[in-house]
Every structure is written in structure tokens, then in C-alpha cells.
Length: 449
Image (tube, rainbow, N blue to C red; front, side, top):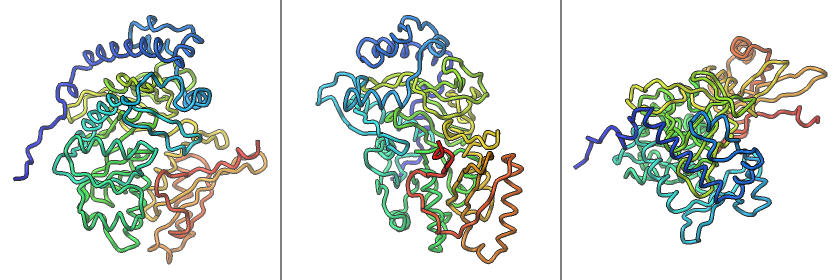
């Protein structure tokens, strides 16, 4: 007998708790973590002593933001070089206490290695279960996973959360796209999980085969590993093309295996699990200055429970804004209404104008003829910065007047981005296919210095 009357929340008391009561729990955990890292992890003691900070300085959540110095990926990498292989922030754990050794994907530089205790791994599974349950995933779902099962954390978090829920998991991993499409037809999963770029890539490959994924068994997409799942035009393409709901599952390698946020089944932005990973929005110029609710700023994360390599005020390099309005789903966690907007270090300054790759993606995706792939190329010509966007057009448009399509794109970019952008149209299939994380920006100006 198939059970369908599942509960609404994974942990109703926790997910619908009064925000003031939750903040009291958060403050208590923050103070506990500060004492732990200062007294047990040399990395933090040295860092805090250099900033004349002591854990006892924090008496309120405001104190935490305004007084505790951030840590960065660069600092973590350097510390692991000096204290191989896990760094002086790893903690003292016996071999039998360790569940996993994983790491960052290394797509933006040197990989960082992480050692996760069994206690932390088990708690992370519970957090992932709560997060995935909020998307509507249930024990009667079948989840096909397209993340690579490697040093990268991504797929493992989905796997452990779905297993904790009791869903059937089909961990196919990062294999040929044709194989994924074949398995969708044969296994008939109800949910598919991968990066946003790979979900877009599969949609494109399916159309090349004359297959409409909108007619497949998949009714739920759980996308992570990169920003994009909350961009309106990207969402529109994926939800229509797959005829499925799209859920932005956010985190970073540094914060994993703990999930930081997911889009619930109300699809009104991503919920921040503040009593697990505390998220702050701060000034991009000064990490100790909080940004008011509703205004854009830099995203800073803190592990409240993790003891093996905890991140305390980790500067993620992401940008977003927060709302505290209660979601229609009833959860009282704050939300990022549009998810992560992009990475601060990806921002391009073109002729004095700040241009975010996420805005370019949203513009490209609004062109009905655009394919899955595009690329941004920035050059310096004389004293001027010039940006070219290479856009792949779908095969059915190859007999169309390409000058008309180019003119449409140029006008749209002028209206949406506010600067003149050169457009280069390329035939579908002529650009490298994205099978994991997309590499969209080539900034040739950096090669000049």
C-alpha cells in the first residue's frame, strides 16, 4: 500500500519557531562555538589574537557581526599549506571518529581538504533531510543524481539527505548526458538533482534527440553547486522545459556537508537554516558592518554545530539580500528572495559600469532562441573596455536572419544592462558543453597586468 499522507514539515517545532526564540538559540550556539575554536583550534586563536578579539566580547548577535573578524578561502588554503593536510583548524579527532575526507572542487584555484567527523556527518544528514523535505521530496520519490561522486561534496549531500528521508536514490553521477537521458526514460525518476548548468545542458541534449523532458517522469529539479536556479529567466526555461518545479539548494564547499538554504515547495526564495548555519548580509567594504534587511551585501556563513573544521564567519564571496517575511509555507526562517545573486569577485567593471554575470545570464535566457551555452569575453581596446557575449542559437533558428537575432540581443542588452555589448552568434553545438559547473567569463584584461 502506497503512503501519500505525509507530514508537512520534517521538524515542525524547529521550522516554525518564533524568530526571537530562534535567535536566542543561535546566540547560545555562537558563544559556544567561539569558546570551542579559540581554546581548541590554533588557527582561530592566532586569528582572533591578531585582531584583539576574545570570545567573551560577544554578548549579542550584533556583537558577533561587529566584533568577530571574518575568515577567507585564501586564509584556509594558506593554513593548509603551513599545516598539511587539513590545517590547524581541523580539530583533534581520532581516526575512528572520522566519517569522510572530502574537498572543494578546486574550480577557482587550489582545492581545500575537509575531514568530517561521524557526529558532524550524521547531523548534516538530518539537515539535508529537513532541507530536501521542504522542497516536497518524500519517501515515495525516486531521485536521480547527476552530481559527480568525487572529492566534491555536492552529490553526497543530496544522497545522504534523500536516504535519511527514505526516498529511492539512483546515484548515477557525472556520466554521459545520453546515459542520463536513457535512465530517465527507463528508471522514471520523479526528481533530478545536478548543477543548474547541467540541467540546462540535458534539456538541450534531449531536444537534439527529439525528446521532450516536459513529458518525462521528472517533476522536481534540485539544483546546486552554482548560482542561477533563482534567476527568473533561467527558472522559466527550466521549469517549462522540464515541466518540473525548480529548487535552489545552496551551500559552499566550506560550509558542507551542512546545507545552508533551499527553495521550499512554495518557491518563494531560499530559506536560510539559521539555527544550523548562521547567515549574515554585511557590507562589501567592511565585513563588520551589517546591511539592513532588504539591501544587497556580502554573504557570511557560520557553522553553529560543526566541530570538525568549523567555519566561523566565513566570507563566501557571494552577494545577496535577505527578507524576514514569513513564507506562505509557514516556515519562519528568513529567506534570500532571489537566492545568491552572484559572486562579488565575478563582478565586471565595464567603462565604469558594474556588470554582474548573473544579469547577463538572465538577459541571455530571456531570448527565446538562445541555446544552453553562452560566454562572456572582456577585452581592453586602447583605453576602453569592450565586452562581447557569444550566444549559442538553437538549431531550429539556423535558417532565420541572424542579423535580426543579433540586433534583438544588442537592443535587449542595452535596455537591461545599460551598456553597449557586442554580440556574436554561434551555431548550437559549436561551444564547449557544460557538464558540471559553467565557466562563463573570460576576462582578457587580467592577462595585461
